[in-house]
Every structure is written in C-alpha cells, then in structure tokens.
Length: 211
Image 1 (cartoon, helix red, strand yellow):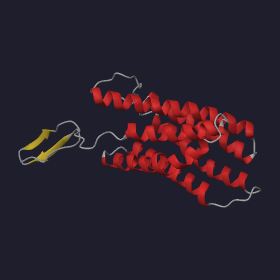
Image 2 (cartoon, helix red, strand yellow; image 1 turned 135 degrees about the horizontal axis):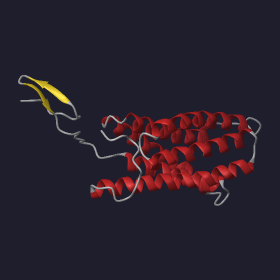
Image 3 (cartoon, one colour; image 1 turned 45 degrees about the horizontal axis):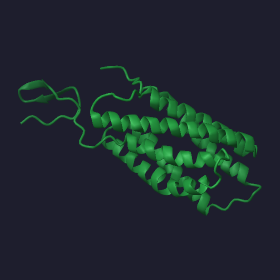
Image 4 (cartoon, one colour; image 1 turned 120 degrees about the horizontal axis):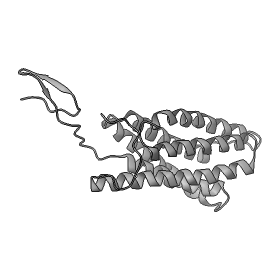
C-alpha cells in the first residue's frame, strides 16, 4: 500500500512515482484563535495606555496569563503540527510576550527611577522582533501584514514613551494599539468565517503566490 501523503508532490513507491493528494490537515486552523487571543489582550492594555479606561490594565494582566499568553502559546504549538513556521513563531512568541508581561507586572520589583529603562528594554526587544516579522507577513495576507505593521508602530511609540517617560507617546501607542487589536480581530473573524463556510467570504487579501 502506498504511504498516505500530507503534502503536494510525489512519493516513490514500488511501481514508480505517483501524484500525491493535496495537504490533509488533521488539526483545525489555530490562527483565528491565536489572533483573537492577541486582539483581546492588546485591546485591554491599549485602552489603558490611551487613558480611555485606566483599569483596562488590570483586565490586560489577567488576560495576559490565560488568553493572550496561554491560549496563544497553544495556538503556536498547533501551528507547528501544521508545518506553518510563521504562525508557530508568531503565536508562540507573542504568547510568551503576554506571559512575560504578566510576570513583569506581578513579580518584578523595579524602582521608579529604574522603571523607564526596564520597561523600555523589555519593549525594545519586542519592537525588533515585530519589525522583522513584517517581512514574512507579506507572504501571508494583507490582513495579517496590517496587524504586524500597526503592532510595530505601537511598540515603537511605547518603547520611546517608556525611555523618555512620555505620557503623550504612550497615549498614542495606546491608540495605535487599539487599531492593532481591531486589525487582529478582523483577521480572526475572517479566518473563522472563511474556514467554517469553506470559501472566501471575508476578504483578507492573500499575498502568497499561487502554486
């Protein structure tokens, strides 16, 4: 019996090369889940940074551990099973971002004098990571690329705002963060609707070249 295939291409069997079937996924697409977890946690923190609802930071801290952190980390692990390197790296990393945000907020004691540098360094590392993830995002879809472009802008503003102790820059970072959350929610919405209906109902502007 010829081995079952999970990728396009050919397999070698005793009778010679034969065409294989299209990719067969046994794991549901975890991207809408990961995007939703990222969006909700980002929204809660951003409304606080924008000084719209200050207590949003408390909600963000709780979400950071469970939804933005734990669930998004799971989404990243499931992306590994689907051989999606971009999704695995993005969701696993941002899941870790939210868990580390929770740890930073709950357990790291920083003096008021050291806080600008401590927070700034934390955000700077994530700014660099998010910036270079823009490049592969342009191979995914316009919706996903928009999330990474807006998130990079958010991190840049928050990083500079932290180093300079600038409430104004942090506030603008909050506003762009809300836009980032909206873009992530849209991508999640499109993903779950299109996957459920098995056709492209909500546009995402696919950018990967057709094979």
